[in-house]
Length: 349
Image 1 (cartoon, rainbow, N blue to C red):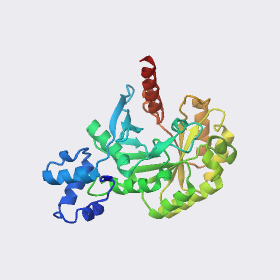
Image 2 (tube, rainbow, N blue to C red; image 1 turned 180 degrees about the vertical axis):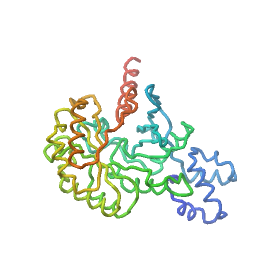
Image 3 (cartoon, rainbow, N blue to C red; image 1 turned 135 degrees about the vertical axis):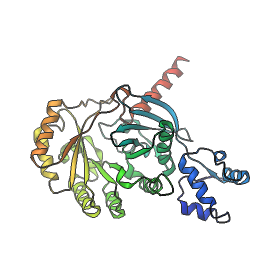
Image 4 (cartoon, helix red, strand yellow; image 1 turned 60 degrees about the vertical axis):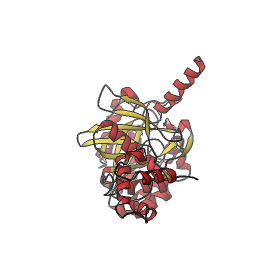
């Protein structure tokens, strides 16, 4: 018999499944699941016979720590999580003045194949379930011993390519009986899956939508982001305007600064003209050096020139703070390194 993924179920779904049990039983189980237990025997206030039934009919998704790296430069921690089937993804726990933020993954690998991204170079295996996305948050919180106050869906994978599971995760992590994390404390990043952006706008979630733009025009964007061949910048920015108007939430445009590709003053001026009628701000990110890629991050001088140009055109802009540089905190690199280490051990043996 195929067992059911219990942690991906909402409280109402669990209540319906346990209709023959005492009314409080579903809430007991739900509370245990959202504390991050990985075994039914840990649900100590449930009758043993009921725990045995649960183990027969259901399973608990878990994200176990395969590798963990702690930065010596700051409090950043990078995790390699392993799921029940052996697949692995990465997550990064960061410290800010307002609390602890975790960047988590939504897919094993990614289909989008952006030229500057380490994850895309490893290919795509499968989508994560809502429970596997949630388990990354729970495991990191239990490991750190501190409450996670903010979540960023910006790790491995494209969240809107795993739309239904991501929406279910959002409902679970924000439920009052669960982690009760407010939507305004959640950011969701997309490379521009336009049809799903319209669908998400109708949900009117109060999360922050981060759009990976990385170029001021179609010529440059199509070169580095294949998704632009499906939805060009005009279509993408139209969807961004609609999202901002529909939700009242400001769009965050992510812009990786790549030396000699998209970092000229002319690029900044063109970008500003395109964005001036959208409720937004731009987050400039020095691109990460990725094996197999010739891309290099822009100089500090060029970064400041780009920033100043946007500001002079009335565009709000920030420069992303670099965290965990000594542990390669950007996603996609740790998994590749782990596989290489395992392969090298196998070759030695």
